[in-house]
Length: 305
Image (cartoon, rainbow, N blue to C red; front, side, top):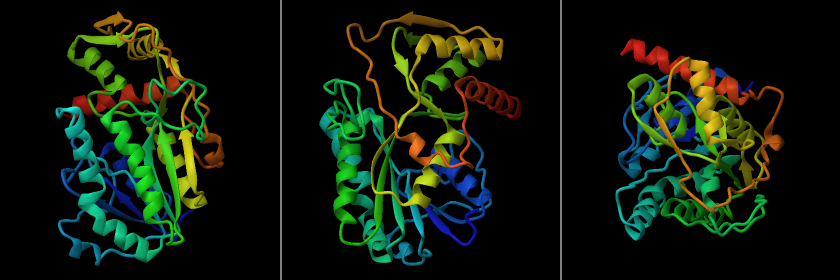
């Protein structure tokens, strides 16, 4: 489908970047998976799935040897959750924008057809009253949200005169086996298979896409080269419903305490732009199928360890 095209994927050994690299290969394109800074040489929680090995960029000179990409999907994002508010904000802006500015300069000179930046719906905060569309002014309340919004503005400005189409896909949570331990699905898996006691934020929603669907939407967004901001959000599901489905599908008990951890806080309502990128080849994964795949793959990986 994408034969003859070259994709550059940053943050390639993160969970999303690894899946993207594999999928782009599967679709017949050449892929250049690159990593910087604190990213590991291989993913921490899953095997590396692609034929093409990740390429570490250690200094600006390494960038000059990269092939010119037709499309760029930027998944690179380092965080440091143990820092204080201002320190965390400074860390994220420094590590994700300034520290790799040589790459952004090089890409502007190479003029790929499209640059897709993986953003997040967490750029919206408690001060954003719903329904929230891609036109809503974000009012983030966390260092992560503020830095992600700054990145959107940075890339718009940096590529303004280069002719590169810049699109920001504001993803909701992505469900997958091997996701970060803080994710709801990962905590549920840990409770079922390791007996870990967890807390569930009862009465509140989680917006979640399965990783196969998220990856395909990102690739399609790159191919369409649409500039702008897009909320890529599923229908919200109550956390207790997600937990119940995990237990039912896995046939295992969950050691959970169900508490309203945000009393009086209304969950946001999002207007999703995902249908703009739902080409016929894009995989769709209903919630129950996403949970089933996550449980099955998590169980298989546990048996292999």
